[in-house]
Image 1 (tube, rainbow, N blue to C red):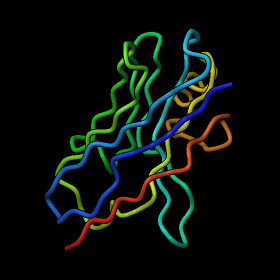
Image 2: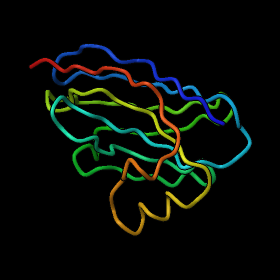
Image 3: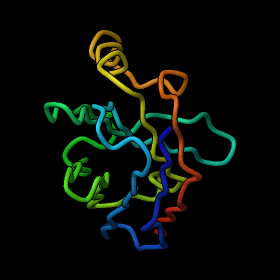
Image 4: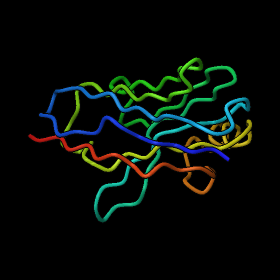
Length: 132
């Protein structure tokens, strides 16, 4: 079992930066495909960025490429999402997610998209609001 807890959400002005954190507890020995999703009111949950803890492979949604950076600190077993040049359309609740092994990473590589059902573990989310 894996427990995920996000933090770092806040309200910022457009053009500002935030760093989200996701602390991971439970099974800290396995390799995981981890990711950040977001969901705005009335919209579907969408994948933002993903990383495979085994080799550092990363994936980004086109809408955040060049602005967001996903990383994983193995020593702290913490997932991060550095968000720069934030835009009002980035406003959403951000969720940390994980799935054990390479399967989800392989699926993302094949489809070019992150799908919520492919991730088995989820945090409760943290709110990010970007004002114009």
